[in-house]
Image (cartoon, rainbow, N blue to C red; front, side):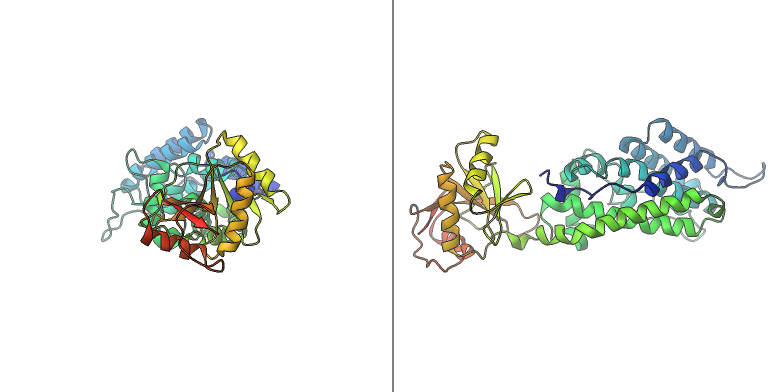
Length: 372
């Protein structure tokens, strides 16, 4: 999906861009260096500075940030409190560059670039030094990707496990949106705490500008996340049962409660939806059918009107998209047709969900549900 609903709306203001420049500039100077006499231990401060320099030389890409984060976590057990606080501050501020660079890109592009590289560190606990009575676990957090884990597998594991309270009730296509917003909110909280606890930051306005840049990103995410969560609720699709089939990859269109066709974020009314469906088939090079995302409470009379238009567009078969009843809400389909197939003897006022539930009892996978 490449709809503009699937991006962070707009780009950062000039102040946000300036914030990153100032903050990154500060990272390359000695203004916040940990003060210690020559005979004191380094506590991995030199390693931290070298890692930050390597990140800057690597053009601050998502992959370079992931390497920076790995290095910082490897150094953490040897850090004292001052070095750990500096590492925490730099880690959240330096994440701005790759996040800002992709802020106006479609969400699928953001997910592919950031989900396995930048977001895990922002979601994870802050960097803290060990204490006499408290030794932090050196094993990777469950919020980090596992060896060889693919992007979508990582997101599904997070939403089914450590982030279940935030995104388990979100279908997989939109989990990236929710985790992006969570990472942004977490980064904003962490940078506020880090700057507030940094004595030397008052002399360098770049740190405060970086904090305001994260706050700007967080406000933008807050502006669209509720709409995404509402749109991504599994209850927007019929529940799939024993008569459903695996989704065959047909070109797909959404039908709203008002009867509009939505394709790639573009809405088409009653006068243009036949042409829109015909163009959808043409663009996908498919003459075998169309899959429709219909709300489960639509009446069969409403569904029949939509099927009529689908048939007029030249589609030979029509499928209704449904969801498995359990996480991760697997996409399934039921075949439906106007005036042909298994007659369930339902009334025109009955719901689409009732039709599909009835098909689960009277037919098997591949059967066509008749809608009169």
